[in-house]
Length: 80
Picture 1: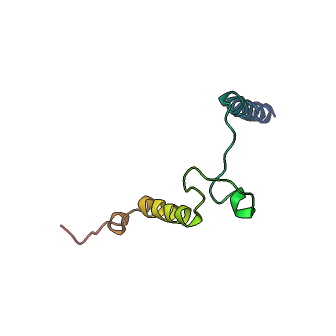
Picture 2: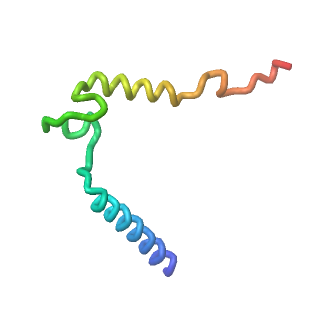
């Protein structure tokens, strides 16, 4: 039972630390390009400048860069 209390205490400390960090950074919390702008609340994204197509292209580029090359995914045992 003490493990649950310790885990809860650690969780509370982490959340409190993050909250204090946000408060003292004195910056507004920002969303992504597809966030509130997609539901009709106007605002300009720092990354795409409000161009949703540019955001989609950037996301696709990041996915392509993070994907491993097909040759790196297996080992060819026939080669000597």
